[in-house]
Image (cartoon, rainbow, N blue to C red):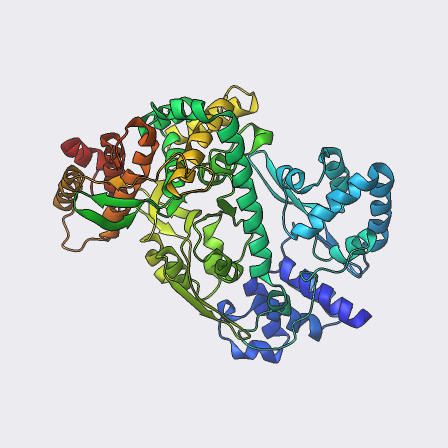
Amino acid sequence: MTTEDKIVERKILLKRAFPRHRLFEIGKRLAIPYFSRFEDPWSIDEDQAAFEIASAISDAGLKEIFDAHKFRDWVVFRGKHYTFEDGALLLEGSWKAMENSLRQIRQSHGKNGMDVLKVLLEAGKGCSFKDITLNLKQHIDPTPIMSELEKLKVTVVSYQGDGYQEWRILEEVSPLVQSELGVAQPKHAPTLPTAVSPTAVSAEAVEVDYVALERQEIEKMNVTLQQYLSDLLKNRLEATIRFGKSFSVTALADYLIQLFGPVLYFDSMLSITQQYGLADVDIVHERGKTGMCTGWNLSLFGEPGTGKSFSTRDMILGRPEAKVFPHGIPGRNRYAGGMTPARFIRIGQAYVNRVFNFIVPEFNDWFKYKGMVEPLKLAMERGEIRYELHREVVGPYRFSNFFSVNYNVATFGRGYEVTVQDPNFNAIEDRMLCRLHRLTKQRFIEIAQSQIRLAFGEIDIEKGAKQIRDHLTLVYAIETGHPLVSPRFSPKPVMITPKAYELVEKARNAILEQIPREVVTFSARLEDRAMRFACAASLLNYFQSNLEYVPVSEEALKYAIQLYVEEASVRSRQEFKPEEVLAKII
């Protein structure tokens, strides 16, 4: 099976080393029939394209491709037949050296080393120290093992940024590690496509039961929440209730301002407030239900390096090695870094009748795949998703979860331009509460100062993070009727007042007065999101009264109106200054 093995490796290598448009160019130049069906690179399936090229060439042809076309020089490939490292292709494998490395790990670390390897192998994706520690069945310090695995080139760093790292075993190395561990080859091991079609999905994608695997992930997350909540109720319940009697969105803002400054704090406040909204509590008025709930989608977008990932990922999930502790609900945030949109749409079926938050860094990448706007728009509307692929039909199913995403845009003196090619992307933006990041001098200074203070341990997040996370988790458990708390506490809806609508109307009129054109470039959904934010932020006051509902707070309304006006300004390409409008309202 050497020929088939080589085709598999060539396919993986080509896909990893060349972007979609380059594969399209190579396929056209080689006059491979598959590529004659398409007029642009965005229509091809990358798996199928790489397979078609891999099947049509020899070793010499592979060398010619790398000599003639620009490749990603940072790519690493360590296969049985090919090696690519430091920008150089070798027509020889790395497995002999890798076998020696694996023997060295076994000799140095024994069973512990093999257990760490097994965790990495079963994950099939990037793992942090935290991921590895949580999945080991006994207490093992993975630090020296991970250091040696990387040094011996058994693993690679798959993500690195802001002091946070993830490692993984390369796809082409997995069969060798499986052999060393004496385990069966998992379904996500390299395979060849079994059919050829313009919209073909690789056999790898179809053979893996992603929904079943995701249900296992959900069960792990449920256990995480159960264990955290049990510990809270046993050891910190009274302290959490005392904390909650004086906690509010203003107290949260003050805490974050002290940590990060008067500009950076706002984004983390949005992320944490969104967590309270995940309970998806009914919003009511004096005469009954409004039809709204507290959940909403969050988007932080702007220039690279402005702190978007820190707010949406690190503050919620935590980055303990950098002394950033998690503020989010344990077991209710699904990190989707590296996940393709097609896989997300598949695994979404496992989340029917559940409410989780999907944290998606680099949201831009999901729209490199044709036809993604419509299903993702439906997902954000909590609508029914049905998606047809060549070899399968996904759904229909109703998605009831939320998103916290970030993506890069090009900002100008006034306004911005998204880097997503799909012209319908504005339909996605319209369904999120959005916050634009500009790398102003003030933001730059605060980011630089925060990095230094974090590096030297001058920012103590741990105590505040634990208190907020305990409060958030307890409120979430109460509002969702978790069986551990339901005998003692009752869920409460959020009561909205006429004053809230009066403020929104006042803001709307002030904004429209400032727009000289007849056409408005933002939708009425913006008011709905602002109101949901206000109600989610009011849940921070859960323990402050004995009423059967949580009143929408004036503090929360103040921030909601600020968000409404500032986002309307951004959507209107800053035809008016938000501070001038806010001065008339608040």
